[in-house]
Amino acid sequence: MAPVNVVIVGGSYAGLHIAHSLLRDVPDAQVTLINPSTSFFWNIAAPRIVAKPKAFRTEQYLLPIKDAFAGYRPDAFRFIAGTASAIDTTAKTVSVNSNGGASAAVPYDYLVIASGSTTSATSGSLTGTSIPFKQANHDDMEELIKSAQGHISGAKEIVIGGAGPIGVELAGELAEAVEQSGNAGKVSITLVSATARVLPMLKPSASSAARKMLEQRKIKIITSKRVMGVETPADDGSSWTVSLEGGDKLSADLYIPTTGVVPNNSFIPAEFLDKDGWVTVNSEMRVQSSDGKSQPIFAAGDITNNSMRLSFKAIEQAHVAAANLKADIIGTGAIKTFEQGDGIMMVVPVGETGGTGQIFGFVPFSFMVKMIKSKHFFIDKAAGALAGKA
Ligand SMILES: Cc1cc2nc3c(=O)[nH]c(=O)nc-3n(C[C@H](O)[C@H](O)[C@H](O)COP(=O)(O)OP(=O)(O)OC[C@H]3O[C@@H](n4cnc5c(N)ncnc54)[C@H](O)[C@@H]3O)c2cc1C
Ligand SMILES: *[C@@H]1O[C@H](CO)[C@@H](O)[C@H](O)[C@H]1NC(C)=O
Ligand SMILES: *[C@@H]1O[C@H](CO)[C@@H](O)[C@H](O)[C@H]1NC(C)=O
Image 1 (cartoon, rainbow, N blue to C red):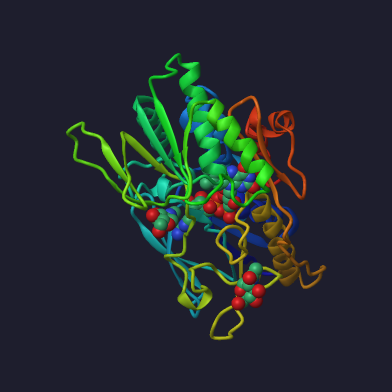
Image 2: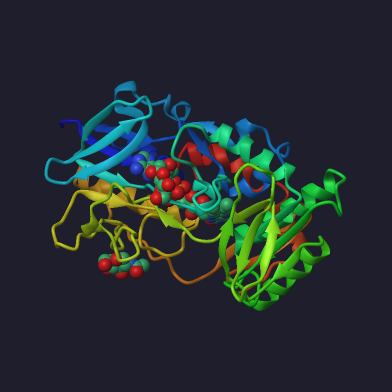
């Protein structure tokens, strides 16, 4: 059989899983993985990483991607450190701008879109200060993280926008970092929620548990107020102003937005996107085109129109996409399908000693959240995710 070119855009939870799966099981697959960062970022631990620079070693959360592929035939795998800028579905090529500046058209027989999502804190679009909750555009993750850690540890008035899991986890970590560094009382942390309760997607008892833990850590909580805007004065040392719905203003020397997920879709043809910019896929993770044409293109993870944008859902989708891609290439094999379901699984640490969450219908006790996640943010799973073993 002739070699089959599979191009994968995005080297994170979903893309890595699919790359390994093909390399393991399809002898004729030639896999090209494109990702701007040469390291995989265990972003699940980002709230602790940015708040507590010493909690983990850099190599625990930034892991070189290439090393994880060293075990395959060298001609079967290629990593391009760069960014996809366009897809030509007629010529079947992906335009890639490599980090070094060169651009090229990379041909594919099959294409996998796993470009995920980003957050406004990561891009720093609102404040000019990047707090990297996700892999970013360039291969400068370590620098970005160090800079974010510096901004955070130097801040005396921190305002966090949004009280979803990231906002709550971050508030807990920041308050604990302040206590641990002996600065209790010298740094104010305010959490602003547009909803009436924190963690609005979880059961009310989880919300009240989180609220109580945050208040014990002296975090001010403002509910039912949306953040309307942030003014960041020039480098003159004066504070920022965070404007709230209704006209209230908060002064801050750091504002961190934690809401909103933005699809990384700038290179994706419009006919593959829904009205919010996510890639439409069917249950087999095949990309659906609004012009009705069938394409040898799969997508998995945050970038798809499946609304539960969680890493374990990204990996479940990757599993299905990889199985169906393998079946297409080899010509045999069972077709798999993905249904995101409506069960909620979320554990939310509030500092190292506890937290809350929801595991299907059940709100776990704080000590359980401590055992499951608060102690280590699953950091030991990073190498497995990179190796496609998650
Ligand atoms: C702070 C934080 C904490 C989280 N905690 C949890 C948690 O505890 N549990 C959980 O299940 N989920 C959690 N999530 C959600 C989880 O991070 C996402 O669901 C997961 O990252 C999705 O993986 P993915 O592979 O689809 O895409 P992403 O992780 O978004 O990765 C996409 C990759 O594609 C690359 N890319 C984008 N555009 C291009 C391009 N044009 N060319 C080349 N490469 C490109 C990006 O650089 C990135 O590396 C958290 C999210 C955040 C922000
Ligand atoms: C992801 O999308 C954001 C928002 O459009 C953008 O700032 C960022 O550069 C994109 N990342 C990549 C890798 O394309
Ligand atoms: C995603 O879009 C496709 C095509 O429009 C649709 O069939 C599918 O049901 C959507 N998925 C979800 C989870 O809404």
